[in-house]
Length: 327
Image 1: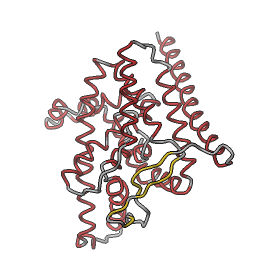
Image 2 (image 1 turned 135 degrees about the vertical axis):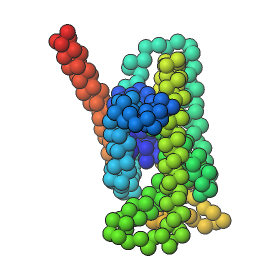
Image 3 (image 1 turned 60 degrees about the vertical axis):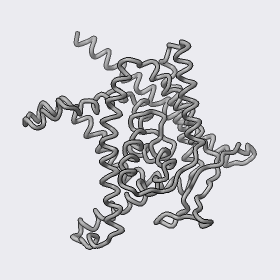
Image 4 (image 1 turned 135 degrees about the horizontal axis):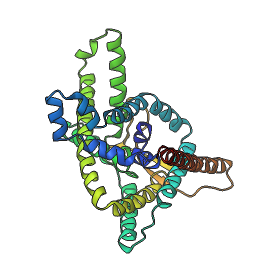
């Protein structure tokens, strides 16, 4: 999920949906409420641990943080050097995700079909929007945290892509993370010189505020989603199907980068890379060998999801058989 959340166009929520722990994720975050605070302040830590499903949440958050500094670094390298094939694999995985959700969706009433169309429309509109300028105002950064974390809780909605649209993807998920990693490395060696570096302190403030906004957003959106999932589960699922389908335009493999300019000058991030503003999509050349390799990766991504689906079905059958034997 952590790696998926960092890739523009890919939703960590889709990963949770496909691997069948989405509902547990939402309802676990929903347990972070007033009752949890009462258990905390009364010292009933064991009850708090069970109430908020802490083991599950720690594994999710720990895995996401671990991937942020490991798997996502690998993903950055692959996208930089094999961009077409990475996007192709993601495209195939999202196609598989749509199949995974649709195959168990058996309520094709008019209201659900309308909900799917609405979801598709929103996904397509988001993919066509143009990004804003970078803004390091801390209140705006906090808002970015709230909105950016939506990729964890809303399948099909890429938090990273939303941050691109808000103009702060490079600031929050590239530059600030790099500065945080560098700072942690220096502290581990006993080097505290960064305290006098105002640029470094600015990035660290941004990281803290963004993290706070993300935590706040996780709790708030999980409560909202928990409420709507209980009352309008089918409609929400229909919107998610549409949203994921609409997001296919974001991860379409064949696209050309449109770089960001300011006052006629091409912008670069702190690594010297050109800042991408948006993409121009085009149809592939079927006579090009690179196109067929990309199609192979689309099929590979699709196969991965189908294999996960088969594994989940087998695991579910084993669990049901074990329960029958116990009874």
